[in-house]
Amino acid sequence: MSKALWGGRFKESMSEQVADFNQSIEVDARLFYQDIKGSIAHVTMLEKTYIITSDEANQIINGLQDIIEDYEAGNVTFKKELEDIHLNIEKLLIEKIGPVGGKMHTARSRNDQVATDMHLYAKEMTEAIITSIKALQHVIIDLSKQYHTVIMPGYTHLQRAQPILFSHHIMTYFWMLERDKARFSEGLKRINISPLGSGALAGTTFPIDQQYTASLLEFDDVYANSIDAVSDRDYVLDIMHNINLLMMHLSRFSEEIILWCSEEFKFVTLSDAYTTGSSIMPQKKNPDMAELIRGKSGTVAGNYMGLLMTIKGLPLAYNKDLQEDKKGFFDSIDTALQSVQIFTGMIDTMEVNAAHLTDITQNDFSNATELADYLVTLGLPFRDAHEITGQLVLYAIDNNILLKDIPLGHYQTVNKDITNDIYTKLNPEHAVNRRINDNGTSTKSVMKQIAKAEKCM
Ligand code: ARG
Picture 1 (cartoon, rainbow, N blue to C red):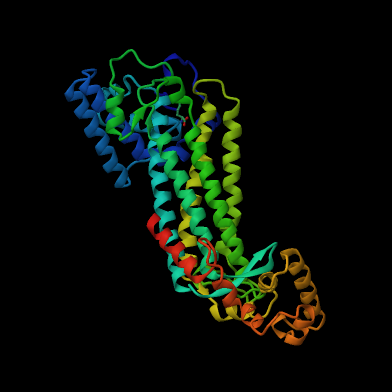
Picture 2 (tube, rainbow, N blue to C red):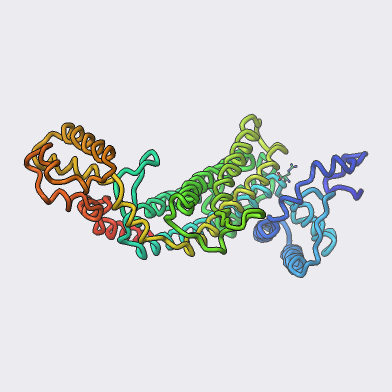
């Protein structure tokens, strides 16, 4: 095994098994670009502060750029025995430009280096997630507009409650996503801070300029405390928490879609492109994408809990345990991005069975509140109106009819003031469009809601 870059004080080398256990290159190779970006900023600063010469800086920066070219041409293979992305790139550099490459690591430690890479990556991924959420929100707005006046049963306890607009129902998810977006954006202020120059933990004796590297990397500030800078992973947990909420929202929406595309509900039909068949039952069309997203919301919750448990007992400052911050984090990021994108395509291509939705609200008891409200307008206290309506529902159930089928004569035995207009009140469309309060389900209110949503985009 070749000598490690830190091998000076060692007489014996690691066994292959130990080296394999110790390495993280299989996971952190994805920080390749961030690592080089951080190194170029660092070396630019070393030159500006006369810690290295311009010639040395140029050689190093050109070398790093060549490594990017080699990498993109497929000519770079990372080595497990070089542990991680940082040491792999440093070794490639030294092989390319000679011992001057060893000057790159002046006034730096892998501890502030890896923290810098992670901040850069966290920032890029947060921005990518925000962009993908926006695309999903656009599709929700489009769907709401397309099926704007379609009425569906609204549920509580998964029991039909009151008729609502389909657009009103799905716009709920717009606002959940709006909060997700806000949480990711808000987190940026804690991500957008530079740990570079903190060294291993204590800072450095070299006359570095940390504000300069921070500005080169477009960070807003530098950590106030070098020990905090190298041991902080709060921003990683922050993102993972935000991903949990995002995935929980997608999971709830997925659950509804899974129900809605069943034979029992038939509210929507998913496109073939987002469903799968069964290896035995030829009639099946399964909503696998929605199920996977619902399932993966559990996996990302586990990732979050895993890192929280890894960090909770760590003494300051850097400990190798922190190398475990990446696997679950990267998995959660990948899952979030893929899930949002796939979910977007799935609902964009889904058909809403508008006629069926409208039809079923004509044939249920979700208009019972209308009857109670109507009795209130005749002067009854709501509690009495509720009781009487309950008895009328029971009467209808016993006679296998609906509220709209109860003859006026029978209504009038309950309350003599009831007139023919009760039947208009019982109409679901009427029920929906009378709910004109600001955030209610009337066509008018939902139009206003959609306009408000569009302003957020
Ligand atoms: N691969 C390491 C990690 O991801 C890099 C930092 C190593 N630092 C150290 N002192 N061994 O955490």
